[in-house]
Structure formats: structure tokens, C-alpha cells
Image 1 (tube, rainbow, N blue to C red):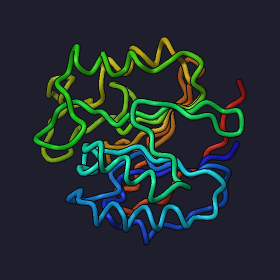
Image 2: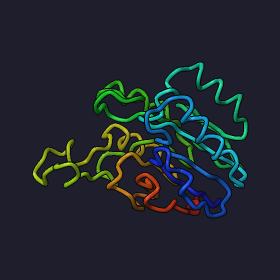
Image 3: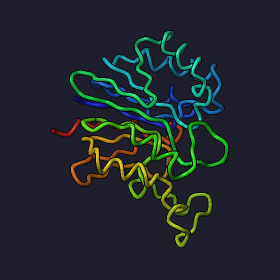
Length: 218
């Protein structure tokens, strides 16, 4: 399975070139302000892509999707797009799971304090998942923000590595073949560890290209 993945377009999605693949994945932050008009504009573009499957997991800028009614209506309006929020889907015998949560930072969507609240969300990720899609990264993997907006090299770990420690702990248990995420614009890249391929597929507002990755063998 070939996966074409991106995140953090923030309404600049029209500037992306989309290579061919089996599954097109957006790992969040399609919107900027996060209202319904922005969401529908993005989903119209996303749904029109030629890829056989499209998976969308919200990010902290996709504010309107926090409302259950908006999520339900978006699913009705765009049946060709699979919107995942703490749930899974099987596509061509490959098990996907998507979750939008990130550690709290200012007043954005799908954010919770570090600790038990976030850990409870990650505990819902079932074992046996092949592809995990979250908006944010696990702590310590493609999440370094040193130097970004003045973050010094001697800052505390939680400030330099903005990912979630509880997500990292759950990934070590679940061990998906592939973990896709964005959110940290400075962390773009691919990292293999303990049988898991981690991909920060941020495009930093479409300034970077999408990421194409073949699903690693089981």
C-alpha cells in the first residue's frame, strides 16, 4: 500500500502536488481559523483527489470539528472521505486508527493537559493497528522545536520536545507499522525505531511537499 500523507496546510492546500497512491492522508490542520467554510473548502479539494481512499484526522486548527454535529454533517456531505476521531477503519485489509489530540498549548481545538486526560485518549488505540494517524507526534520523535520561536537548547525537555510522552508510551505497546503525524513544523522527516516507521508529514503551510511512504511489511 502506498500512502500519500500531509499535514499543516492551513488553507494553502491548493499549492500541493499530490503524487499517485492508494491512500491520501491528512494528519490535521487543514484549516487556519477553523470555521466551517474553511473546512468545506478543504474537504471539497480533498474529496476530488483521485486516490482510492482518503483519510482525514483533525488538528488543533480544525476547530469546528470539535462539535459533534459538524463532524456528523461533514461525514454526510463528503462520503468519500473517512474522518477519524478516536476510531478506526479497515482499508484494503489494512487497519487504520486516527486521533486528533495534542498536549495543551494556548486555546486551540482537541487539546488536553499532559497526563491522565491525554493518556486516557491514547489507551483507546487498540493493538493490531497497522497505520496510526495522530495530529501530534510522540515525545522525542520528530518533535524538536529547539530554536523555533526562541526555544533555547537548554530549555526543559517538554519545551524542546513538544510531543506527547503518553502517546509515545502507547505506541511502544501497540507498535503500528506506520505512525503518521504533523503539528510540529520543525520536525518533518522519517524515523525508524523498534519496528515502527514514524513520519512527520508536515508541509508547513504547503511550503514543503507531501510525503509518499510505502507501508512497511508486517
